[in-house]
Image (cartoon, rainbow, N blue to C red; front, side, top):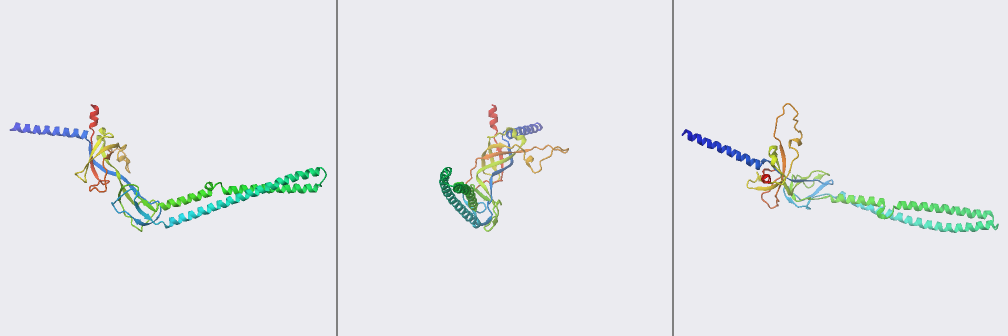
Length: 336
């Protein structure tokens, strides 16, 4: 009887040892952690203009599609700015057209002065020939020379007036700096007016909403969030001793604490380049006399094969707890 008990105890011990060995081998080939959480892209909706909310088209947790109107802001001041910029542009173009008219007048005046100057030069040459022949007195020649000098001065003045008019004109309408500045001001006012309507940037669910119609919001203020629909992943914090077999591209299975009957699949996308502790607000300082060896955890990103739809009854939630298990058997196949 004694030997039978010893034999049974030995069998039990052997069974425990074998079981522990199999469990250890399984954990080595299929590393797992329950320090894992669901993640998704979360967009923060912020206004680009300041104003009072006149219309709010979303509620907490409801689904929106990209391009849906989320809210509207009172655009009275913004519309007035557009009207003012439009008026300023029209006045600037009118000034440009008037400057163009001044250029035309200056050109006509210069042509007239040059034509008169040409006749005066011919007359001076004729008078000079007559003076040299002693047909006319010197006083007559002097009068002709004075008139010629006056016309030359008028020509120079007409050229200066033309240059001034051309400078004020600034080239064609679209090249006039003043017109271009007025167009830019109008465009900025129109863009600001368009910001009075806030659209959904992506498909997703509204979260963290406390906004109400009538609230006054400011530029850059965080209003609420959108949890994107398309991209979901798990951040699994594995012990550093389990990372030796984990590689990018390996398959993974995910069990969700929230839904025990839900099992998801995924693929290892990347391994973190630093431990969670090293990026904390107060990183550990190990160069001290009371140092204790602690196994560190490194984040492993697992991309989920998960495409939620608004009609689903069971939805993943960002931040929910899961258990992630990575299949590393491909390393053994490669070694073979």
